[in-house]
Image (cartoon, rainbow, N blue to C red):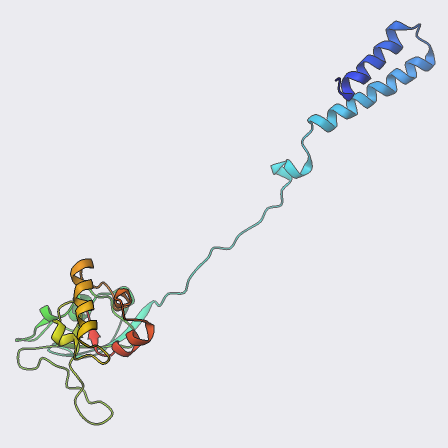
Length: 208
């Protein structure tokens, strides 16, 4: 089957060569020739929608997330200069200890996770041989309960946490032995039996 272009070509040849040419036939042949050129242009000329140069220029704004630039933390205990510090948000506990002048004689920074990132609004107690727990007062006037290092605590020590019984304490130890030390407190969500609500109740009692 011949296409429209082939039919137009044959029609022009018929008008020009197979019959004696007359002005009328020449006119028709010219019109057919123009029609053929127009058809070819429609077939081969790229449409406006497919021409990249005709596409509108669109600027996509970069996606940004707001991250805190600084954090405010309180360090107390066996440090040279305890108090409130404003530190860069990406600082580690080791950086805070250095800013506080280091530990005093008898300090036990080895009991802390010096690689932990600082969290805004937290209080960090540096233990010493003579004072292992933070004596800060709580609302009822008693002393604050001891903080539990979830990367070092035994199952018995974990049971001192609110809502943590023997089975959950054992699950924390198993998860830690299998997956390695917790890199953040949010990692406790990977322990079966700890959900967001239970984790929220532990945050004031646990450290890394």
